[in-house]
Image 1 (cartoon, rainbow, N blue to C red):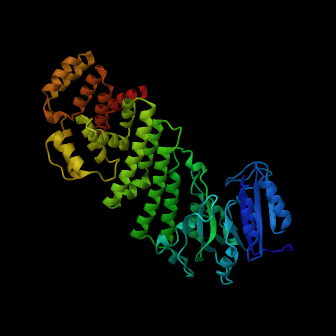
Image 2: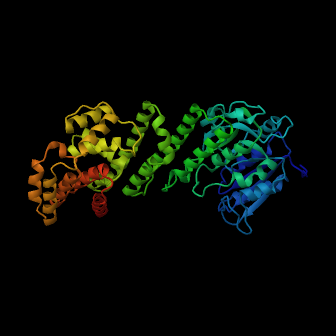
Image 3: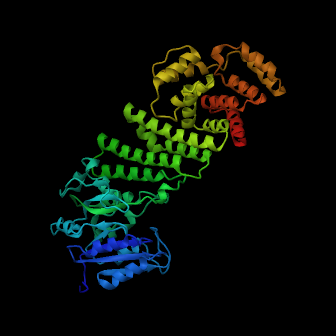
Length: 512
């Protein structure tokens, strides 16, 4: 076919080590029923035969413009000298519209025709179609089919009546044509993203595009074929701040809905469910990825569940969702616990679980059900459940059981539990002289004398800060590290302002 001076649509592809798939991808491009296009391909430093295959196709069809990087370079930032990134390719495109095609995917033969005809000859900022997601080497083994609700309203704001109508289709950049001039003119805005975004970059870009777009058409047909591969790096590695990418996407989704004036409660809840789905993926990864230390796994889960976005919305969910989510948290922690007890002593594993709110809640509940608990395991379960750090609903029956067993009072809700605990911790002025005496004996190492005094104290003083600390000192002197940690953890949860308790707890855990 003769070279076209001004191709109407530019297809952009970056290829790296896809020798098994690039032929199928290329054939789907060259067999398009709409022929007025150019295919801009970057051979991105492949070490297999990808480059050879692409050179063969480029010689066969003049519409293919092949660029080559000496080494793999796949970042959205200024490109290095003599090499290309995605934005370079976009700026070199000549089409009226641009579309992105992943090198291991392929297109329906009418992909370009259907998308361009949907513009009706007008300049539409974005035209989107659906996709068929299939497992790696079998296009007939369907993983998922995603299609948008048909949409052609000239007021793009109406696209946001329900997130369900568009969000899944706008997670990837591929599967749509975008008006080139509109795209290029907004590049600084679209690709100005926080440095910590390492996953979901496509979704971030799409949400930013929609914020500035004036027109959009959606076709309710799947025309893009996306290959689901099992060797993704996201399934084999994890890093501490990965979940922050979900936060950035959540913020952009919220911003888009505000721009469209579609910030309804229903849309907020759906956006929150999407965010929670991302956290669930991370929770599973932290539980499954090999090579992470136990303390790192527990810290990552704690950070994940202390996330400010998560804490903002989790409280508004129904109890059914909260209970379901709690089960998923505990399932992840159970897997971590089982893995860790195979690799190290069980007691050491248990003690590390006490360091973090969600983990201590899990381990305390586990020990209660296994009837391996003492009274402070029960107390830790209650404290971790009603802590300000923890916004997930808990099992009220278990909380009531613990409260009644420990303090002899009935409890019907989390709020009741918090009230009862607060009443029993206001003991600073009780038995003042005895507490002074205990502190003096502790400083002398007279632990037997301290224990005699502890035996004389009222039951209601069990949660007093000085009493907890004194009991912990006596346990440590006897070599009972497990109960020392439990007592100090209990005191630290109830009296976080007492730095000496935190210091002692940290010192013991660091020795493990």
